[in-house]
Length: 195
Length: 190
Image (cartoon, rainbow over the protein chains, first blue to last red):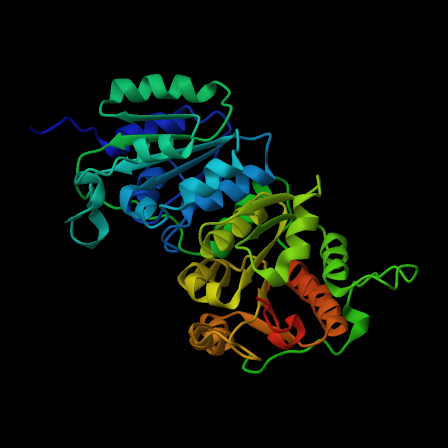
């Protein structure tokens, strides 16, 4: 049986339109393109590498900026490389941290090889077992609308949501590759000097 | 930079050791130096050589601590902390350096300040042969990915080295590992 999936760009645009001041970190590959396609902004930090780093950059940022909400948007492949991060994040228990896994069940950037999430590994279940305060798997844009409302409400711990998206390679919307510039403009957005 | 750098210029250090407390040992002095450098976040995979730092930071309400499942997590957390305007330090054993290599491309390429303290194994009175390969490869691996590497073999040297490494990391956007020699840490007791 083929279960329904959603359009990744539309889903990400909905989340970003409702970000309400949230700081955003993106995992390498298509999630970075999806977020960039919704509009380049100073309060986005895009990864082009450091696979497995997105959620943890988000954790460090959430701990440094406890008054702001942090939303990490990454893919199933990137998060699979940071499987243990769910334990670390759960123990750290940030209340301003949301992890969105765009899950197409494939390694899209390298030729659409099948990933673990199409073979029984559900990040919502893993995160729930680790102790995340709220987790869910979403399969429709209507559910994303509801999620946008949910994300506005305070949390008492980290939250993780799996968005089951269609496996397709959309036209790339490329963020700046100069990571120093992206870092400096992100810090400037928060009022911090370059160095 | 191709050679190890040692702290030879005390005037560049921000070291402030209370002369009224001469009984303090180097682990407590390193904690004081990191506090003076404005560290407000510490991430670690435990090692016996880091025991005092882990205990002191964990008891410090001004510092957020993270216990990691693998060392590279700390590299990414430190980058996020800097994005948010805070200063972080990562503690690990030399065996953990190998786990970090690709993640280190983040601070190296994006020029995030990074301060890592590495307790060495596999180089001095080591009883466990499994520790030797990574211990011997630690300095070369860190340099290969682009970190500045400093070493200390005595407590006084370490305190001074950590002080100036923190200044260089956070004031000059450098990525620095301080290797704490196994000779200083002593033979593991069983």
